[in-house]
Length: 211
Image 1 (cartoon, rainbow, N blue to C red):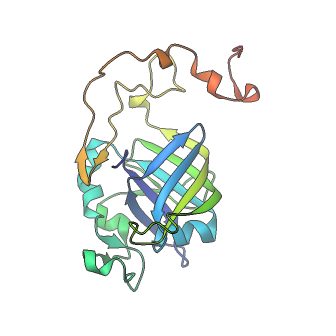
Image 2: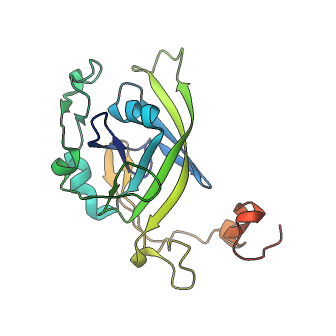
């Protein structure tokens, strides 16, 4: 089905950075669940180091994301990926034309060009699709905890710099293996009418909001 595109940066054994696009992710508060092929270098790196960065590209980075398609940081290429034409690439940042920048709370670098960058630590790992005959390759559902958020000034709300303005933020969307962007706001959401602070535990609220 697809979701907003995520570029996951992680560290290889030799200290170099791997960068992989994916589109099976969902968020709850400061947590995120990632659906990934178990044979990917990204999964190997996250399980080994316990860290990654979830970089969210905008529509402007679509070319860079597409250049990473059908590439892997695994050498040799996993057997389940060879029929689809995957090839090994050592320097994923270079291939994509993107710039690594140092993170603050984790070791893997962030992607400078991505308007949103979420530094994350491993929270839990689950086998996914076990016993499902329609799933071709082994999969993992990886839960990560967001420990640091970076967002460019241009996509923040004018009245609250702790919030991203959905009118300004145009994430890149993957829908059935094709790239799409967002149109305008379709309809007012009643869910947006109460303070977002209520999603947080009381001790993390900056403003006194009663539950």
